[in-house]
Image (tube, rainbow, N blue to C red):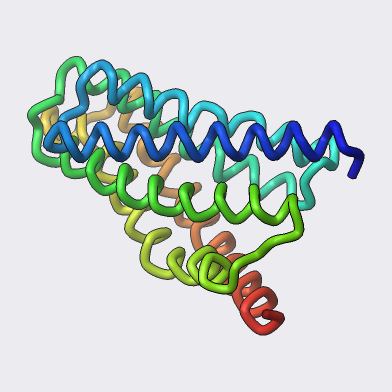
Length: 199
């Protein structure tokens, strides 16, 4: 990896870490309210992840293209839904609970991940951070998916089950989550076995 790519990736990971840290700090101190500042910070923190697909495609980062794309696009989908649904469902229990869950699951995951990636670029991998990166997912990944599902079903909770375009989309999401979640979760377990056994 040449020096310019290394420092670009270091800057990317550092900035992503800062946005997630700011989002969690503002979100927690505002009493878990999704106000305009918090929504902006969440959009920046999660929106940056689209670049990770490019990083993998041009081989700046060694990760599978398919699993990276699936994870990023599923998060971006939920991010778009948060932006859309907050207009009409900001006080609905299932929506607010979903936002709280994904905020915690995504935020903790990304603070650990980006800090580890940043330090790894400079040849440092603290054992505690490495353990957190490959252990927290055991709880946080299913937790995050649960929060995402709370957000996905928000319109159905309010409007009921009907033959609508959104409910067709929801049915397709059931299939895709059902297919990809076990694959990605199993992949993370394999990564954990490889990484944890080697430090």
